[in-house]
Length: 372
Image (cartoon, rainbow, N blue to C red; front, side, top):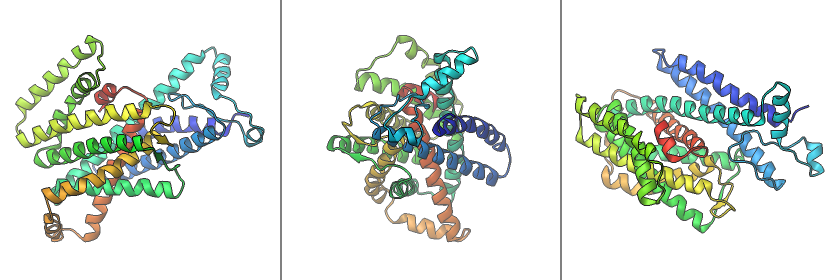
């Protein structure tokens, strides 16, 4: 007799855990096709999960109910009760179930939140692995990081627009202030991605991610210096081993590249600004920035703005040389292979960052950077 949405949420939460365990096992296989299939399966699960979230939030809006941003279990009752404008909070349902087995309400909420956030971080990790492998392979075939990065933004933009047109997700509506904020986040996202692409193209993937491990330091610095949000000294002390570890690893790196190093460092700054400003936008209340501005919708808008802003950058940086490199790649690849590789890398870039935004909506930007 429990609400259908409640059961769906529990299925999604535990489904994430079970499927992620399976995918972790599959990533040890040598066949990249198995990893790719697993990543696509995860993406489908994410899509179903977020579509359910979107419909649940739409129901809340219609009933004038404000759900808790950290609770995945706020639901409405069945259709008959909804007609009579009666709503309930499933926290009471969970509380009853927990008390029957000797638990507490706080315990249930904590467990649900930890499973939810932990699932986001694990899913983000898996999708990021697949993206890095696919992306590096494509850059090895067509070494045009600025143009490839811009086209990946295009793939993600089309993905978001299709979801909004088909009403799979409620389309966001921005205010003038919202457009200004999203434009800023889009610029930071675009610069961070393009600089990361340049770093990946200039050196080994492992070296780029060693340098990008400094992102928590940049997030803490941006929060303090730019936005005046200082944290406990212990937080900054925990970053000392991170900075020291990255410095030591860079000194021992055999394939050290200054171009890869400085572009990765600059991308750290851009992504730190993106995380802090995005968190501020997600925490804004009262529809100040717009309507339906969920974490996934915000990232969809950010991707569209990033694509538009990346066009002059890749035209100035690489011009039409991309076409020459594309034609050169056709000697050992078919056009279909290249198009498919570009679309797959673009989708995994979008999905891995979309899950990152889901995690960001639940944690502090520095916590997000540590997870990254």
